[in-house]
Image (spheres, rainbow, N blue to C red):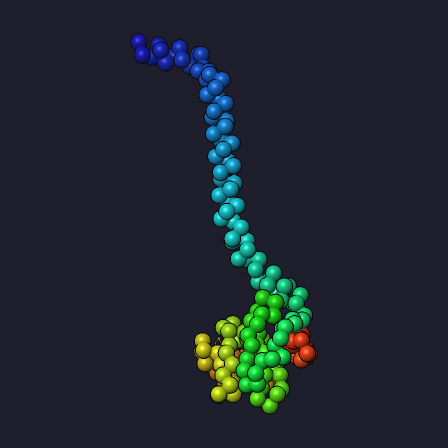
Length: 164
Ligand code: FES
């Protein structure tokens, strides 16, 4: 008896009511859209992470000059940290009234370095790297290269720092 019913069902395929087909299609479209949003939400940060070194390099090279308003008032023997493009940099006003601007990114592994006027050095606290605060030369520790120097022009309204 039951095999007879099964045979009947296979001869006459079940047709769905029109509303059920529409709701299934709507569900699939909504699920697809949600999936696309999910993939985009996950993929965009990954894309930004992977693309950032190239973008950072291009934006860093795009900046050629920074004007530090009122920085001419910086007391001798002190430092002003600033951003040159995306990277930290420092302007040092030495006690003998000379000015030096350098990148503040350690050439070892990229930590931000600090000027220590009492020790007359630029120090990297990450692994003990030491640089000369006048030339940027790497004097001791693991840094393989000197810090880059910038050109400095002191004016009545500020200090202009540009690529050397
Ligand atoms: S990152 Fe500066 S010494 Fe290692």
